[in-house]
Image 1: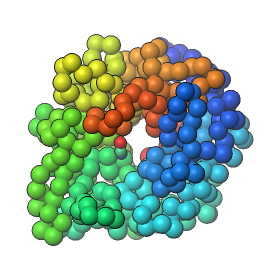
Image 2: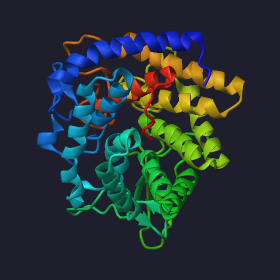
Image 3: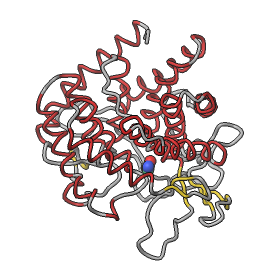
Image 4: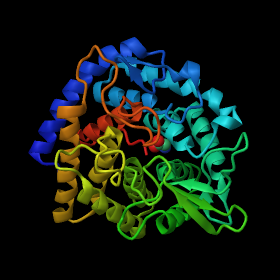
Length: 377
Ligand code: GLY
């Protein structure tokens, strides 16, 4: 990709700051799997909730940093994270639609980098389990599990678009088309039932699990029904782009572009992204993760369109990334987190705190612009 001199210069400067920050951060946290930070100190999901859906991102960061620097500290930390996740592979409660988020940045990244056989085994086990969640009547991959009185049998979520690459990878690796067939069936359903005419997306769609009929939508982690949760927009934008990259099916490219155009039209002047594009006007809550994920999606999308459109996508990605760099990154090596003001869900009690996948996708975006990325998805 012919990034501009300005894009390259920014990425080089950001990479130097990332390398200077992440070495002491990783030395302090090599035995943890962080999700968030309080007072500049990472928590550790490996001791409190090994099944947590974000537990692959720390490993993914480590693989990107190892690719950037060649420092074995990062490789060792990545491998340790991957091995800890074996407990999840042995726990039905830990396996769900997010198998891709857990094993693509860990086992599959390791396999792609070094052809490690144990990593191949982990990735294929995770892919088989993900494929087993496919609802044949509704042609969707179901979200979450039911272990109490909940009934999520017919629920699907836009986030799952980012898990489909585990299935595309499994088909490439095994030469068995079933995985890709399931991924494409889910992507077709998502394109039809999640993406609205204006390019905004629903977070949750409920189907009748027996007949497969679409029943209703939910606001999920966004403001409400019909609203536009910004991280969901980003998952859709990047997820459909990835389905295009893996299948070369132009319909997915067009869907990704519709979501991207809606996102572009809603980026505020200051480049900082709210939790929901349709949240009340007096609400100022932000979600920096949405910006970082969307930037990655836009940079990928810019590679597959003509030059005039490519420039528009790249300019938007740079607006998001430079706003994060200048206003929402903690470059102090004494604090563990990189991105500030991330939000998990609009109706949660807490808002605007560090979240590990914000850090991961910011680093991934910089690696794309440097053309040094270990392709994870
Ligand atoms: N996949 C869940 C989230 O984005 O919060």
